[in-house]
Amino acid sequence: MNDSPSQAQQLEQYSQHHPHEILLVTIQYNEQRDQIMIYKGFSSSLMNSTEFNPDIPILPEEATIIRIDRLKSPYNSQNPQYLEQGLTWETMQPRLTGLS
Image 1: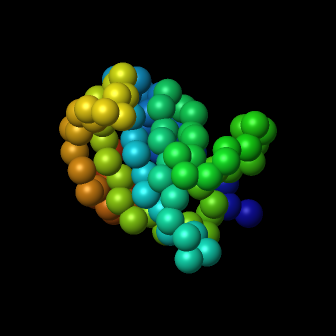
Image 2 (image 1 turned 120 degrees about the horizontal axis):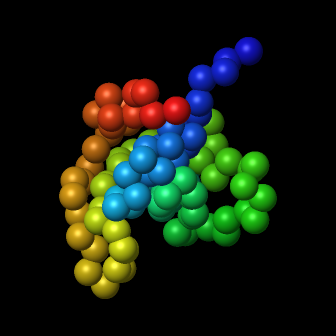
């Protein structure tokens, strides 16, 4: 059994440790794209409905992360303030180590 945290859990942990940031994650899943906003440990889909049950992962294990954008909090959709854009899962991973 694999006890390592999922990608979503790792990104949520990162956002808890960096409350001044918002992660905007673009994923591909079942031939559909979605954008997920992660802030202070919580995830919400910007393109699809989000389950009320926090135990149901919003980022499926089978999903492919296309890109991760780091934005300054608070988020303003009319004037988003990007810290970094177009990060890959591989470039984000070193920032996620040791956050549990």
